[in-house]
Image (cartoon, rainbow, N blue to C red):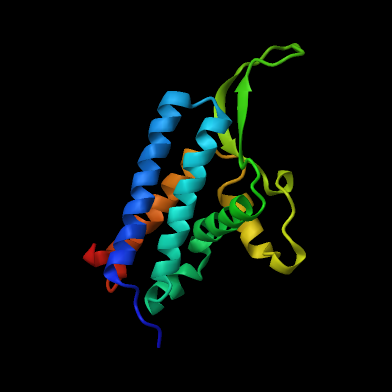
Length: 171
């Protein structure tokens, strides 16, 4: 039997995620068209989401929920967290706006910072290949505006908070 995480550590991870998410929102409001400005709070938010996820895995009920297809957003978050911390790539890119050369017909897409597709990131070291994580990332993060999957992660934790017996219920 595993020991549940100390309440303080669980609270730290929970607060860390929500504070980083708020900083990401502030950064998107202030610098929403700069992938470089958004990259740091995006990576921090995903880091804290994964820390919280790891703290919750001592709960058998969470493990069974986490193992289902609805857990893809957390598998994708873990995959990109590992890529961001081990390979140090820029994991987001600016898309849209006007670019040269101008081609006809002219279509100007809104400027958005999006998560990169997995195939645009450095490859995983052979000993750490996670095919399921990469697939989950491409399904839940890739090519989406940076805040969308973060909101999916927040919803994941909100659902977990409401699950009877969840370690989050006491927070």
